[in-house]
Image (tube, rainbow, N blue to C red; front, side, top):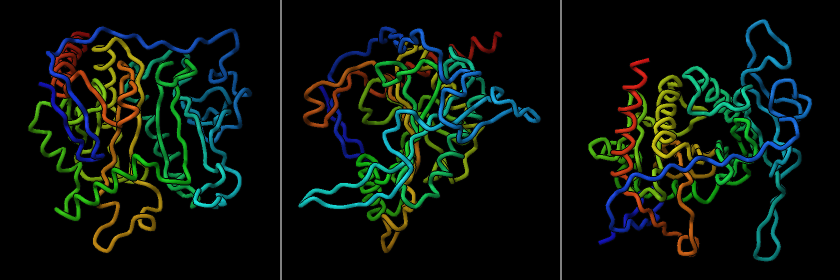
Length: 347
């Protein structure tokens, strides 16, 4: 029969129907059409974007178009950096001004490059820019949470083909992250341990681990909400991706082999990549007598391939139906990874 599993971090439930695992049919990501307009993210078109915030260029080369990674404000920003929050009420309702920041990280000058084809150095370079921008935005006292994310493929919200990721600084802590913190705090108060540290300790003995190195574990969550949902988390406890120590070489390698395996297994699907990290000014927002947020929250990266649509039942209840059990997904990805490693060793 089918089973329901409870996610210990969000308390959300997932239904897994009873049926044998069948390798999925590849679903190539449909990319947004480029049209006839020049790409604003390509070298030589820097004038088409707002003034850059940050960029990496080769030493001794200050040429505008010589960048390797570039960060600019989003032309269609959902939040804007100017002004004050002006939190206020309208009767029982709360509101505030849309202050924040919305930045685009243009990851490479190559228009048709794909993240899973980046080499180790390129992923480290992109991850370094993520951390630097998140750390810089965290210094602004108006911002409560910094969200790093990547939308690949039109069905995942990727509206431009040129490889890019985004960062949004929010004046509030999002509901999903706040719920994770509340449940992590509840767990800590009972056991005085980080819940994700305990999840990693237990899952290392399970069939849900896809890959691991000295610093990171790649696994399918016990109650994954969608097929092949994959998390990457540091082995040692760390609450902030932006400000805690991160072995970028190991992180880049874990991310690269994971995305390559997913692309190979599922036919380069559309996906969302999301970094969940501790909020800024956490001690003021979540201070408790016995524990700090940095003790109980454990940052992690989530990859959600878009191979299944969400239906009315899931929207209505918040309970997801996942046709692929995480143990089956992890096993299949491990097999893909073994083939991948064998192919690379021949080259």
